[in-house]
Image (cartoon, rainbow, N blue to C red; front, top):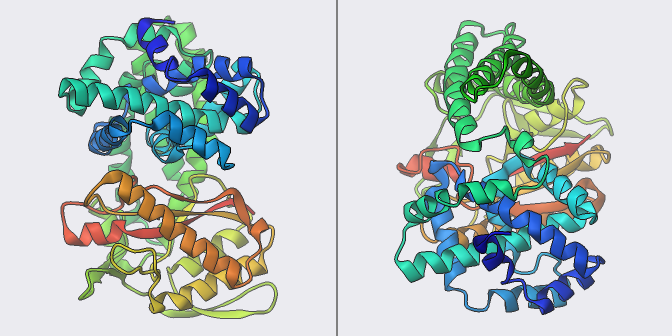
Length: 449
């Protein structure tokens, strides 16, 4: 390993490695080997983080750099039974830099190190905390901002890339910075073409066109990116086909979900989509909460005979329709927003007005016990990023506990039942009160059905 990589791995003391191994049921050699792969993997992810997340990433690194007892906190967490120890920062960074590829990367680490998949997930959070601590202390010690740390990491790009585990580069598409740029351009063009198609076809007859557009633009982007890498024609064809095969199902599934969302929107929300907005229409109340516009009243009859009152385009309508649609595919990209779950300002206490939609969600989950879900909590970007992650996690936990208390079985939830993402994944413009209000939300993801 290089001096940089060794310096970070040296943070993992013998005591920490021993505690991690004992907690995860692995041997110390396996844990050490896992960290050898994880550290360059995290550094590569940090180095290629989207510029839109640099501010949040900088806040997380700064908090980690100020923690002079990071290792002790991790060990304390392991001793108390929390496998990822001081994983709030580490877990947040993993979600930010890898998103829905986290599990695939964890599998790569598992294969390389020989540890169980669940163990590699926990070790990745610990490794991310170590990297954050190292980079944060460098930022503070040398007076660097996030731009400075990114430039410094860029100088170590070759040594980081040479230490990446086998399979990581192909999963992320080779040179991540080039691919990210191509993907960003393709996304912009895709959004414009898709919304134009949607605005021209109100009855949803062109749903099939969305995945075709997505795949076409992705293929073109990959083709020209590979061409720029001086790959020969035959290699380009083979690799493009392989990447498209891998991406095809995810793109098609995401397109189906998007099409379902669009079908259920009000006319005003469809107009918002065609103008580039991603959240439903609505307005601020006196307390600054976002109150989504409601569709016409509907009754939803569940398979167990229970009937609930809802509105067209509501969470209940979308969730029920998704569960009942035999063509819909559950997964990490399938999320629906609660419109009526509101909290006391700065607290994880639900307001009384949230009761109705909670009861409806309970009824749906109890009627379909095969469905497994995960809850996500989100905030706007005001204040400290880590504090926002903790607040969003506490709010998601509150909703989880409410659902359990009202009779939803624990088996209705994914292995990780809830998670706080703080200011990540905004759906509104954080530069406006309206956008901030839309970003403060609880969402539900259908992981199995």
